[in-house]
Image (cartoon, rainbow, N blue to C red; front, side, top):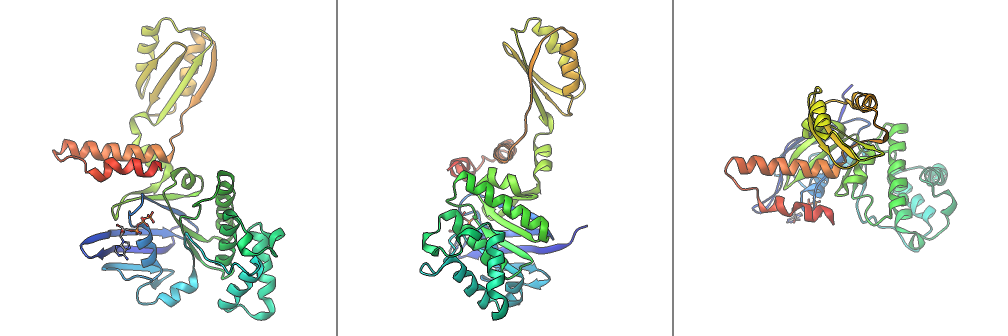
Amino acid sequence: MENPVIELTGLSKLYGSLKAVDNLSLTINRGEIYGLLGPNGAGKTTTILMMLGLTEPSAGTVTVCGYNATSNPVAVKKKVGYMPDNMGFYDGMSALDNLVYMGRLNGIPESSVRRRAMEMMDLVGLGQAINKKAAAYSRGMKQRLGLAEVLIKQPEVIIMDEPTLGIDHAGVSAFLSLIRQLSNQQNITVLLSSHHLNQVQQVCDRVGIFVEGKLLANDHIARLSNHLFARDAHVVTITFDDNISNRDEYHAALMSMEGVTRATISEKAIEVSCTRNATPEFVRYFVAKGLNIMGVHQKEYGLEEIYQRYFENNLTEKESNGKPGNLFQRSFFKKIKK
Ligand SMILES: Nc1ncnc2c1ncn2[C@@H]1O[C@H](COP(=O)(O)OP(=O)(O)OP(=O)(O)O)[C@@H](O)[C@H]1O
């Protein structure tokens, strides 16, 4: 059942003549992990700052856990744990003491703050490194410590700005799994901003594609891909042990099957695009024809492709309307590939 925790309605933020956020409406439900995706300068941080009541909207409203973030930022702050991309620690203090200090600041009684801090260190996988100075922590360890600092206040919502910045591949996977696990166990709502599409894909229930202050798409990853790749929602490649003869016959047979939109035959492989999953039928057909199948591979769309396709469609639409796609969109991929 839907249970909105973050609600943005007609939200805009102007910096002079620049619309950093442009009429944004979005609802995020309890327990959801939502990914705000977009290139540099898209308006992700500005949106987050408005959610936290740290900057005022030029128009529209932000409600977090039932509180208006602009008029009641203190109430929102009690419910939300915020992890900026450059979380600071007291370098000369041990990691545990950093956490104890943060616990005290959040009003945890002296009698239990140390125990709670230890529990949090265990929870984020730093139980063996509690006495190490924060300065001696690696980037990945600092992110975990940051998460512990956020969790010690028992938030209903966690907002993270580029949480995986600068962490190596293995560290990113471990950190994202931890977020997923925490969200599942404690029903915490998580909003994370990122321009690392593949990473976000691993962990988010839903994503918003955010460009130039506007939300261009907002959906579950699977639905986004079904919508964008409707004609070739299912692409399967079948490889054979020998060169393919009778190409015209096979091509005609495949194209006559329900839902098939394209069939490409190369030396030892056939790639078929279909609006439905017809892989068993393709396999039965070729087995009946006496061909030896060596492999069957079904394509899965990643967010990189979803992103790319979205912008291809967008450009095509604009061009067909007689308006050229704007330069920003053309340079977009250069930015996100970085
Ligand atoms: N305080 C400010 N004064 C003027 N312009 C600002 C201010 N803060 C942000 N901007 C502008 O607003 C736009 C959105 O910036 P924002 O930081 O929200 O983007 P972002 O999506 O978080 O980018 P990044 O991924 O680089 O962090 C940018 O054009 C930025 O230059």
